[in-house]
Length: 528
Image (tube, rainbow, N blue to C red):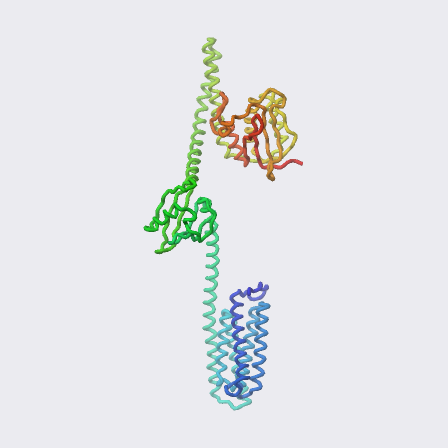
């Protein structure tokens, strides 16, 4: 039974205090019942109550009833620890002293039980009020001996024995107090270590559960004792601890059996039946015949990470090269313009135009390459679609005078989270492609916003009535440097998708209708 919270101002007894007090109360009830049974059953055959049987019987009966009452109160309302302990100890000393008086004094041997009470109270209370209990027992012994000397014949040597017993009370109290302090210190230390261990276990379990690598603990018989969720994914199984390793992977079980013959740390690459390539690391136990650790690492993920690092390094190198190329490219373009202005030879003017056109194309390619590094600088903000669209369409009409009639804009207004510059760049690319491939009819290109099927998401659609994208090229349109336009760089759609991902959005090519249909799904809400 767990204790209830201790009220403010009460002793801050912990559960172990109450548990000790319950055992102490049970011991008291047992002693009280023993005295009562001895008095009722054995009568004069034992040296209990020889001097005043009636007093002994009454005190024993009251002792039993009060012991039961104290135990019931303790079990039902564990409050005010120090008060309950002090009252119970006072009852013990009073009852035992009265029964000792009724049994002829110290010679009855009941005084030894007072030593047990003092020692038990000191240990249960863990050192608090120990000397008070010893003093209380000593005073009770002296009063009992004094009353005996006044009312009955008493040997003066009894006072000496009473003094020795009182000294024993204090010695017992002091020793019990020292032991209790040591017990409290050890218990507190054990409790702190237990909490630290629980925290470490929870942290370790969380780390193992969220690891990118699979972890298995396998015993000497090839039975899996523990495994984390990632191991289930890598082995493509759903199992629990206690299963045979062979049920998870026959190849891994066979390799483990071979490795177990010489259990030393080893790393190997293993291909599963599913085709997944795993890097397996075996770690033996520190004890002979103990459990072994098996780490599983997905080589595809490792290769993908290596590829990402290569691409990142290549991107930085490309950006630096693009900056270096731009300066001489501008000089070449400027020189070609000067040659075209000064030289009247038609052939040389044509050559100068070729140089100028190609430098412009190279400059556009350099600009596209530099866009690749801008996705990491995304600053999403809440944009009102119709407000943003009005400014965008005005600028688009300046570059293509047919855009005003060929582009049909939806009327639904939404708010979306997007980087303003990135969204402008994405739409400029998509609308440029749509206008280039669409017919010259009015409303040939449709640009509209609508709510998405998932909550808190909106969609932007760019649809044209052109020939669309060939089925064989659908998987390549977002690849870098893939283009079907002679003057294109092949980076437009790739950059558009990268910029969408930088703002937490997604760009897709839908297989709907005859023309091209691109959809942007972003975080946002429909305006009401």
